[in-house]
Length: 105
Ligand SMILES: [Zn+2]
Image (cartoon, rainbow, N blue to C red):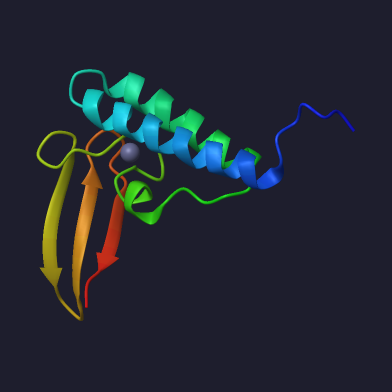
């Protein structure tokens, strides 16, 4: 076993820090460079996959599941509150038209 390799928990800690950083950059450039933001989040998901951790829910919520675009309300996604059977938010990605629903209590 090579000694250089960081321990698993250390790798996870680093991965989390990297995901956070990538998300920060992605959210900052989401308006000016949507493609760049998307690429960064792609990397973030890969990093998470590699060490088998989950991307935090609050980050996942702001990314389109279909095309991976960083969603900015009023910019590239449409957010509507609907109240048919139960109250929920619908987030429509303008880039690909994907609709995600979030139920609110
Ligand atoms: Zn999309």
